[in-house]
Image (cartoon, rainbow, N blue to C red; front, side, top):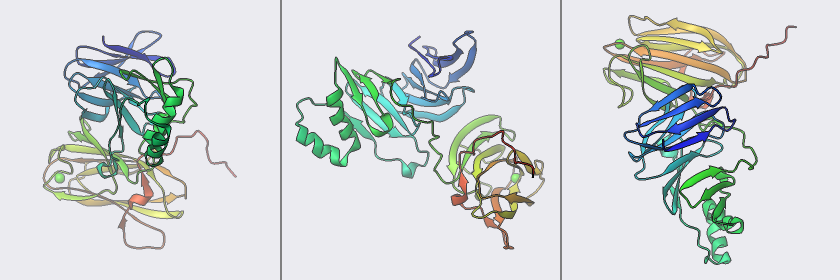
Length: 347
Ligand SMILES: [Ca+2]
């Protein structure tokens, strides 16, 4: 075993092993909770995200991966990094911090939309000889340099305290391990995709979600691929897709929902099945009417393509309109509203 770490609440333990597998265990009973399989060769490290929902692993194969800590499902697939020792998620889950060498940390935003990923940044060994004025000048246009500057003030017995944005008070010890300071103020867990327009899309091999192939954010659901595939990682036939997130109408009212599908589709709104056409034999638009408030509604759409042509398009007819339009990305977010046990008050 190469590493072991507690979940932030102390109920689980993540271990990294030489058999290419990281594991999550129940700390009390020792029972296995999840197996994280995907690295080739030894897994160097496995650590929880600050909210305990994910595990980040680093391997001898030079890649890092992010997993669902409860199901063992891959959230961010194998990302090549080269030789590195450890990867950690920032407190808000928006960035990964990789220890690349004895003096280098790489910070990589985890935004799924490639265009939106900022430049990679590198922190090197802070220079004690750096003049305070020079550090201040660097800090003006670089928040990470600002963190380095502040770290000078916190340096003690070889422990460096970085206070860079996402890495609020992360402690970096000789840069071979990264430990989040448990005394740092708690940052509420925020999903990294919460503000991204669109829905979370999971693509599976098989017509019934047999094997997860890839995930991404779809700004709209509007694809008529005929005989092609919606993603290079997805086959042209026999695949299924699950979109999740929230739907927020620009104005409350009665909306017509329309899903053009080849082949089958089903749609849940606030966990209620509103379109059920899972065995559609042909290209067809399936419709329903729903009452939308001006608050976010939870939405889940499942779709499969068996063979031949394939298409999926999610449209709506807003109140007062007659023609369906594709539901715009501005009304979609990949993270659903929190479930609540509150019920509408009877009047
Ligand atoms: Ca088809």
